[in-house]
Image (cartoon, rainbow, N blue to C red; front, top):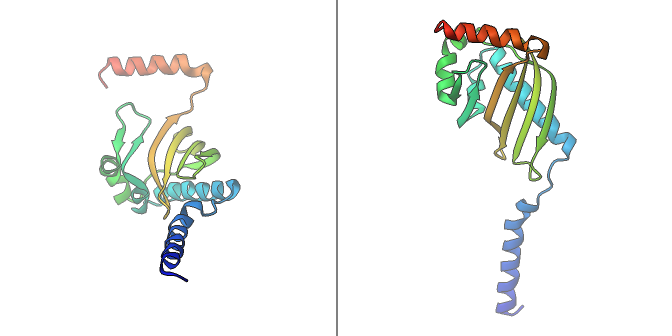
Amino acid sequence: MRPLATTFAAAAAAVALVAAPAHAQLPDAAGFTQQVNAFVDGWHDDAAHARPAYFDKIAPNGVYIGTDKTEVWTRDQFKAWAKPYFDAKKAWAFTAQKRNVYFSSDRRYVWFDEQLSTQMGTCQASGVLRNTGKGFLVEHYQLSLAVPNALVGGFAKAIAEFEAKGK
C-alpha cells in the first residue's frame, strides 16, 4: 500500500473501532425488562434486609419521595433518615405485586410504576432509573398509599383534622 492509502486504512479502522460500541447490539425488550425487574426487586430486597447496598443503588443526586408530604429527600438525606432502621436491621419490606416498565430506545433511561405489598398495606410507586452501562441507578422514586376512591373523602378529612392540630 502507498503511505496515503495506509494512513486512510488505519484511520478507517480506528473510526470503526470507536464507533462499534455506539452500534452495539441493544438487549431485546424482554431481556432488558427482566434486568430492570431484577434490579428493582433486588433494591427492595436490600431494604428488607437493611443492607447498605440499598443506598449505593440510588444516584448521588437521586430523589426519594415518601408517603408523608415532608418526605422529599436526596439520597444522603434519605440515608440519614433511614439510619436508625438500618442500624436496627429493621427497615421496610416492599414486594412488587405488579410492575410496568418503559424505557428509552437507547436503553439509557427507564421509568416504571409498581403496585406494592408493604407493611402499610398496598402502596403504589413510580421510579426513574439511569443505565450507567455498568448497572442501574435510581434517579427518582416516589411512594404513595393506594387509597380506594370510596375512602378518599374520609381520608382527606382525617388529614385535614390532623394538620389543623399542628401534628
